[in-house]
View 1 (cartoon, rainbow, N blue to C red):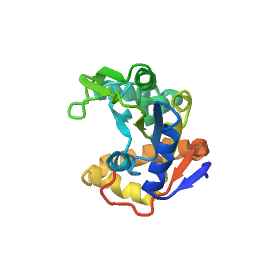
View 2 (cartoon, rainbow, N blue to C red):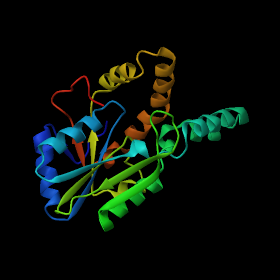
View 3 (cartoon, one colour):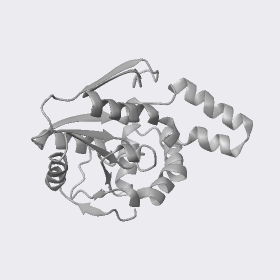
Length: 224
């Protein structure tokens, strides 16, 4: 991936950078992005555990543009049309997220310290019927860790104060992806095709927009 403006290799150094940035404002919204399996969510948990600041985790995976059933129907319809542009839009995972709602959540947290979302992704059913509530502590400053794969493009990138790209070796993320699907070869190969077709070009084009490139010294096998 392209070089970002600054490289950090340890969690403690990243914590110090966040706390320094947060000290100058009531709320710091940090984007944590990278390939699926890079260790974004694990990094968020580790930062929450060691930081002396108030931290909340904003998971972009809860914000889906469509339910699973509607998404699959859209992809099938696009393939039936035979129109290349429609197929690319429907099956590109970047377009599966409700970015307007993510940005609304960030704005609400900045303005009110609370956000309630009533159409969150249900990981068990694929429906958009869960409630997702996020509340900041009244004791400022606070840090919001916005955790998502695709955070380097506008307008989501401009809603963030700082963007960290978790730069884990691609082969490690592939191994983790295979474990996630319990070695379901068909599903793994389908997701791998989408990664090669859409996600890798995304990061090749935009990784230079990250403020910090986080290159962990070690990569635990259970990172997500």
